[in-house]
Length: 290
Ligand SMILES: NC(=O)c1ccc[n+]([C@@H]2O[C@H](COP(=O)([O-])OP(=O)(O)OC[C@H]3O[C@@H](n4cnc5c(N)ncnc54)[C@H](OP(=O)(O)O)[C@@H]3O)[C@@H](O)[C@H]2O)c1
Image 1: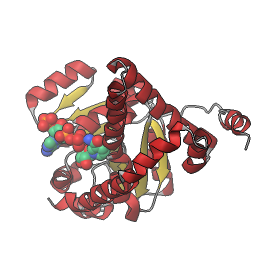
Image 2: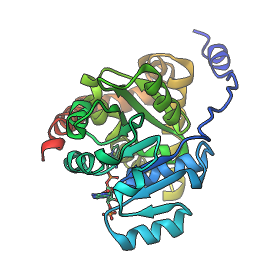
Image 3: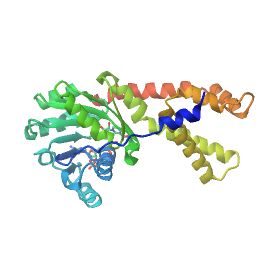
Image 4: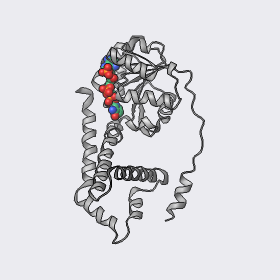
C-alpha cells in the first residue's frame, strides 16, 4: 500500500467560487449557543454581512449584549425579525419550535425558506405548526462550525424544493462539510456528529491525562493528544482509507501500539462508544416532546 502517494493525490484541492448570498435577508431565531456559533461563523466566512442578519433571543438584556458583541441587530421580537426575511433559521429548543412557528407564521413571506437546526423536530411538525405549505429544511450542525470545521446533515420537508435544499446546503458548506440524508437518519446524525464533539473531547482529555500519567507536562500532553486526534481525522478524511487500514499502518508486529490496542479492547472502548451514540440517538428521538 503506497499510503504517501495516495495521500498527496487526495489532498489536491480544486478552488471553488464562493456562493453569492449577498441578496439574502436572514433571521436567526434563538441565537443561543448553536445559533450564535452559526451567526458568527457566517460572518467570519464572509458569506453574510452584519446588515443582512437579524437575530433573536428570549431575554432583552441578552439581546442588547449580543447586539453590541456581534454588531448585528438582536432583539426579542421574532415576528419583526422574520418580516421580509428570505431565510429564517430556527435555533430555539426543540420543545419551543412549534410555538415559535405558530407565532411567526402570519409574518412569513410566501417564498421564505425555513431552516430548523433543532434536534428531534420533524419537518412535518414545522409545516403543520405553520398552517401552510411552508418550505422547510432540517439541518443538524455541530459546534466545530465555530472554526469552519463543522459538519451538518440536511434534509428537506414536503414543500422545500431541491434548489432550496441546495441553497441551505451551500450555506452550511461555508462553515465545514455537509451531507444530505433522508429525514429518518436525522436523529442518528444528532447522536453521532452533533453530540460527537463531546465524546471526542472526553477521549482527547483522557489521552492528555494518560500523557501526564506517563510523565509529560500537561500542556505538551494536551497538544500531543489534540494534534494526534486532528491528524488522524485528517488522514481518514483526506486518504479515504478505512480507519482499520490506517490503524494497521501504525501497528508494528510485537510493537507498543498493539499492547495499547489490547488494553482498549479489554476496556470495551468500541462497545462503549457504540452504546454512547445509540443512547444519544434514542434521546434525540424524544427531545421534541419533552
Ligand atoms: N448545542 C449544540 O451543540 C447543538 C448542536 C446542534 C443543534 N442544536 C440545537 O440548537 C438549538 C439550541 O440549542 P443551544 O444548545 O444553542 O441552546 P441555547 O444556548 O439555550 O439557545 C437557545 C436560545 O433560544 C433563545 N430563546 C428561547 N426562547 C425563545 C423565543 N421564544 N424566541 C427567540 N429566542 C428564544 C434563548 O434566549 P436567551 O439566551 O435569552 O435565554 C437562547 O438564546 C436546539 O434546538 C438544539 O437541538 C444544538
